[in-house]
Image 1 (spheres, helix red, strand yellow):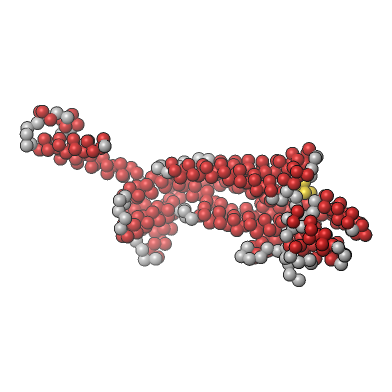
Image 2 (cartoon, one colour):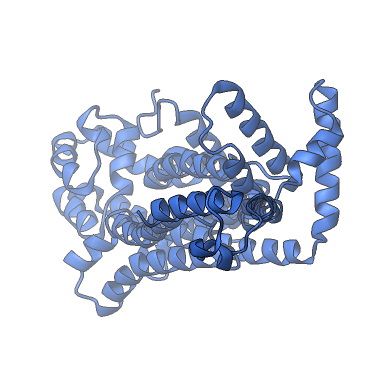
Length: 415
């Protein structure tokens, strides 16, 4: 039988794997006599982020190293400024890679983590939206009622009519046990009441199914299959409305705090005001987007969103404490050794060249500028006060020519 409720396409296999993880966690909770899907999502989030911990560590390490690397990266850019030929660009890229190797970071690390998070988030949405399709013990709750509705006259038309109002799309494509279960899982209390009134012969099994799945979906008084927006629109109970509002608010707040914690102690690179402004805007917009999504998506997604931000904050704090205790000179020494062996194995530049190139920093650039000024001063043989006293120099002398050059430069600088 075709499982219409399962996610297909490229993300289908990922959703299936996540479904196995969710099913395993739920089975453990059932064995502990606490069969709760909301709690399963909480534990599931912790498990997923523990698996992603190595990626999180690399991302945070890159963030911590960026302020240290920036002077050397800036020096390399200044060194090759205005030179756009292929050979020069290759040299600049090679020296930049050597600086990254020196600090033991991969600039693509943060992008990789973001991609992994997206690859998990979208399939996870399908798993939470269709838990019975992935968790067999939840599916079993609906099977008896679904089989009876499958043979009950008028059930197909009735379920297809109410399907769009509860975002149950599969029932309109095909009337099978799978699509019936998919639709029943999205039922709200008023839908269960209407179903029992429509088919009174099935009222007993409808009532028992509603009670069992209600206990499984209940998390802090809310049905995780329902959306906060529906609670706000349809429920008059004050506590439910407050809980519904808290879900998107906490989702936005925890994400904002997570960003603040991850950026704590990290300074923006020099000369990146535009980039810093863009990042600040994104950091302010993303929590608002989280609030909107968690307002319109099932409560289960809001639970995942909140828990993921909380877990990220805890991981970031622990990682930062670990990085602060590490000896930076020892880290750089080990990274240089690794880079040296890797380059020599590939037949590239020698370790001495790597060390020489990676050691570039802003102090050397400043020293070069100072040397240039001293040389210019030596050539002219004049200090700044002498340059301003043209009347005291002999016509045609070296001093007079130096004055002319100085005045020309000064005139064009003012422009």
